[in-house]
Image 1 (tube, rainbow over the protein chains, first blue to last red):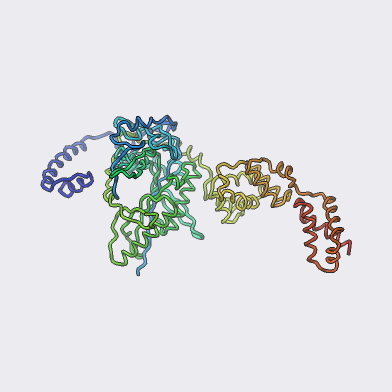
Image 2 (image 1 turned 120 degrees about the vertical axis):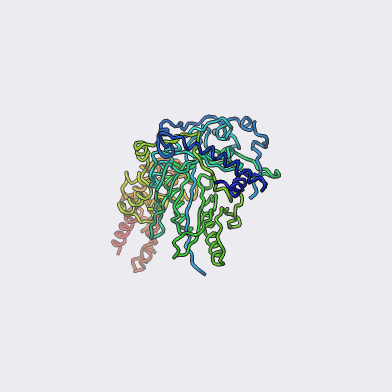
Length: 94
Length: 479
Ligand SMILES: [Zn+2]
C-alpha cells in the first residue's frame, strides 16, 4: 500500500519537490485514486490479451517503403527554442 | 589478495537494415543534415499514431533464427517511460514481457576451447535522437533524425568470464547478423553498440555479486578496456572490504576509466506498460519457416564444411568466413574450379591483401567468381607464372575482365614451345662460353647463372622446369 516512502520515491522520479507536511495528505489522496483504479480489476475480459490472443499478422503490417520526411522548418515550427536546425533542449549534467 | 571470477552479460543494440523507420515512413540513412529525416510521428507530436514496419519484425525474427532463438508466436509492444531530452515522446516504444525472440545460443571460439553463450531474449525498439552539446549555457541541441530508427536489443545471459570472451561474442553476433543480412553492424557508424553488465564473485560463492552496468560502448576496443578496468576497480574495492554499489557507469575513452552516471540512478524504474498505440503481432509457423528459408549457410556450418569436407586449415577457414562476401566468393569459385586449397590460398594471400589495405570493398568485387576461379586455375596449371597471376589479379581489380584475355594481351602466357626455349638456351650457351666451361669443369653453381640468363630472355614466360631440362640436356651433350 502507499506510504510516505513511496511518495518520496515517486516525487524523486517525477522530479517534483514535495514538502514533508504534504506527504501524509498525498498518501491518503493517492490511496483513494489507486483504490478507484483497482475497480478495473473487477471487469472480466474474455481473453487475457497480455499473453495470447490475436495480433496483427506479418502481412498486414506496414510496408517498408520510404516517403518524403517533413520539411525541417515545419518540424521545428512548434518548438519554442531552436537554433541552426536543431531543437534546443535543457542540458543534462552528468 | 583474493581471486574473483568476473561474470559478464551483454546487451547489444543493432540497427536493422530497413529502408524506413520502425513506426513511420521516414527514410533511415547514416548521416544527413540534422532534423531532415523527421515527421510528426518520429518527433512524437500529439495526435500521431505509430504504424509498425513489417520488415522490422521480419528482420528481428531472421536475426533471432541466426542466433538460434525460439520465436514467440504472439509478441507485444510496450512503452518504456523515461525522461531524457533525446526522446521527444518521453517514452521509448520497446518490448517488455513478450519479446519476439527468446532462448538462443551463440558459439564462440576461444582458441582450442569452444563455448556457448546463451541469448536470453531479442526485442525490437526505437532508437533515440542525438544530443549535440553547444556552448549555449544550460542547453543542448537535439537532432531527432535517429528517433525511430529500428533496433534489436540482444540480451545475453551472464555467461562470459573475461573481456576476450565478451569481444568474441560481440564479433560472432555481429558476424551472424551480417550473414543474415539484417544489420550492417558497423560500430563506427553507431549501427552496433553494447551495454555491459559485470559483477565479481568468489569461486566458491553460489550467489552472484552486485552488478554494475556500463552503458553505450561503441567499439570493440572500448568494450574490452571498460571490462578490464571494471574488473580491476571491483577487485580492489572487494579486497579493501568495500561494498559494490549497483549503478550505471559510463566509460571514458580518453581516460580509460568508468565513472558513475548519477542522472540514471533511478532510471531502472521504467514503469513499462502495454503500448496502447501499437497492436501486438501474431507470427505463424509458416512465417517463421519462410524467413528461415531466406537465411544463407551461416558461419559455423561454413567453418565445418571448410575444415572437414574441404580439408582447409582452421586459420584459413576462419579468415574466409570472417567476411560473408569473401566466403560467398570462395564457395562460388570452387564450384567452377574445385581445387579447395589453391582457391583458398589465392584469396587469403593475394585477394584479401587488397581488402585489408582498404583498396577493395568486398561488397563490390568487380569480377565474377568464375573469372576468379579461372585465374587461380591458370596459376595452378602454370599457364601463367605466379607473379604474373598476381599482376592479372590487380588488373582484374582495376576493371579488366577475363584473366585469359589479360594474359594474352600482356604476353603473360607461358611459352611451352620447346623449340623457342631451345633456341634461347643455345644462344645463352654460345654467348657465355667462360661460364659454360667453368660449369663443365665442376663449378656447379654456375648452372644457376645460366638458368637465370635463359629465364631473363624468356621474360618469365616459360616453365622453369622445361628450361632446366633443356639446359641440362644441352650441357650434358657438351661434356
Ligand atoms: Zn518520421
